[in-house]
Every structure is written in structure tokens, then in C-alpha cells.
Amino acid sequence: MSMTEKQITVIFKALCDENRVKIIRLLKNGERCACKLLDELQFTQPTLSHHMKILCDSGLVVGRKDGKWMYYSLSKQGIKNAVDCLSDLTSATPNQTNNS
Amino acid sequence: MSMTEKQITVIFKALCDENRVKIIRLLKNGERCACKLLDELQFTQPTLSHHMKILCDSGLVVGRKDGKWMYYSLSKQGIKNAVDCLSDLTSATPNQTNNS
DNA sequence: AAAATATATTGACAAATATCTATTTGAAGT
DNA sequence: ACTTCAAATAGATATTTGTCAATATATTTT
Image 1 (cartoon, rainbow over the protein chains, first blue to last red):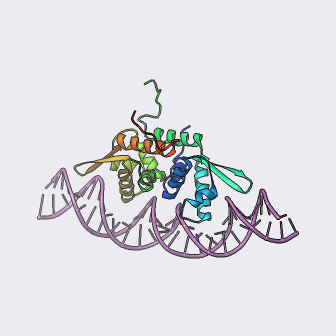
Image 2: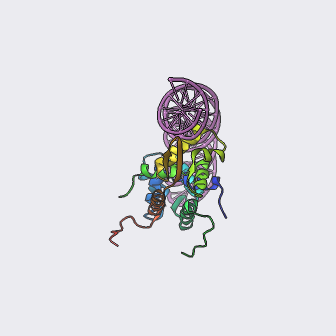
Image 3: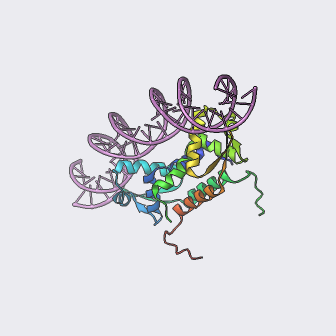
């Protein structure tokens, strides 16, 4: 159940770049096409592609292909996992019976 | 109230290195002296010092000096801030009036 | 005051990362 | 089939980051 240090860093590495944080904020408003995201950001298409790969690999974001377009959105499951991961990482004891 | 992308990345950068995650896990068991941490890790003293600075700057960890020793522990406040930050980053709508 | 010890700082270096341009892949429309 | 358009990939490069050895700083002990 407990994740390795490596697995944890994959999640948080996704969040340690300014531009990826911007992307996540944009996705808070709902699913967005890659080209729509690109409109609101200050870098090139290959760079966006690179960031989206990292975000998807982290599980925080999911992609859906429709024709030639890619639609991205936040993953509820992935986010829950990240929050759990952070909580777990910092909670007092690993074996909480949780009868508070 | 809303943090800048930069401020957010400072928090998550702290969590995106394997060794810093290890350090946080060690600190889950309570306050530790730097030299005690060093015993359990595979790198040199200057590297530990470097990582502790990043962890402290992120607010997740606090240091306390006692004579020539430095004692580190997790910061409840800093952790709460990080969890809030992650939740906020990914919660559905940005404009909650928050007069609860 | 001098020695010993814990931690921080400096400077160097290798590895990882973010970015770009150029190209490729894949899907739609003509 | 050819063209067009969206996204991905490849390769190059500059910046950032993690690490170490050497040194400095600060505190305690003798």
C-alpha cells in the first residue's frame, strides 16, 4: 500500500513547475482542448505536449482523444490519490485506526 | 489569498526529490537532530544541509537550534497549508465566497 | 585561548529539466 | 490521393538541481 519515494515524487514533480500549475488551474474550469490551453499559455506546442505528458503520467490529469483533438481534464481519482499521498506522508503515524 | 504559481511550486518542489521524501518520512516519527537524520541517509552532511534548507523554506519543516545541534520536525501549519494548497488547486470552482 | 564538534556555505560538476525548431504521425476535409 | 490541421516526437541547448570536497561559522569543552 505504501508508495515508494520514487512513486511519490512522480506525483509532486508534476506540481513543481509554474506552468504546469497554471495548466491545472485552467483545467479547474473543466475539460479543455490542448489548442485552447495553448492559447492561454506563453510557450510553444511541443512544450505544452511535454507538460501534458508529465501531468498525465502523474495521474492528476487524464486525456481523451477525439479526432485530431486532445481533451484534457483533472482526474478526481488522481487528485484524491495525491491528497491522500500528501496526508499520509505527513500524518503522525502510518497505522492510524481512524476512530477519532 | 490565492497563491501565485511560484509560491505553490516552492511547496511542491520540496516534495519532488526522493531523498527529501525520505527525510519527511523520518520526521513523521518526531523531531530529529540533523546528525541523527544523516545516520539514516546515504549522502554527505552538506547535501543534508541543502535539503533541510529547501524543506524549511517550503514551510513543511521547522528547525530549532539547540547549542551546536539543529533539531528538525514537521510543521503542522506548513503541512496544513500544503494540503489546502493542493485541495484548492484542484477543487471545482475558484470563486467560493467563503463566509461559512 | 585552543581544540573539537555540528552545521552552513562555497564552488565545481554531472544529471535532469524546460524550452525551442524541425519533423513526424494521424485524422478530416476536399 | 492530396492537403490541411492538431498533436507527438526528436534533437539541440540553456538552466536548474543534486551532489561532493573543501572551507567557514558557531558552540561547547578542555
